[in-house]
Image 1 (cartoon, rainbow, N blue to C red):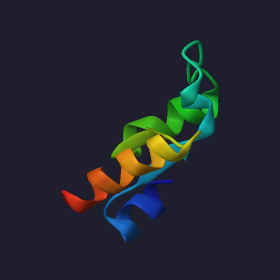
Image 2: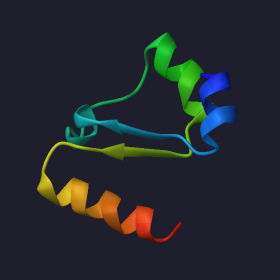
Image 3: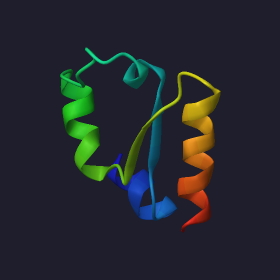
Image 4: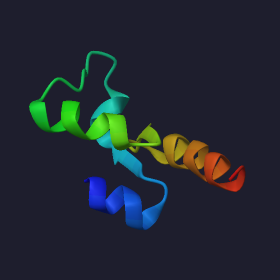
Length: 59
């Protein structure tokens, strides 16, 4: 993950589970990845993807 971060410069992680209000990223893999993720976003419906498009335009 660190190599990806260095090469990409910015990491955006899309997770369809973020659409569920009870979801918590508790796995060891997510715990290791989240500090290197610049934007952790939902991807469970069209509205969440539209929000992402707005975020990408700002950069």
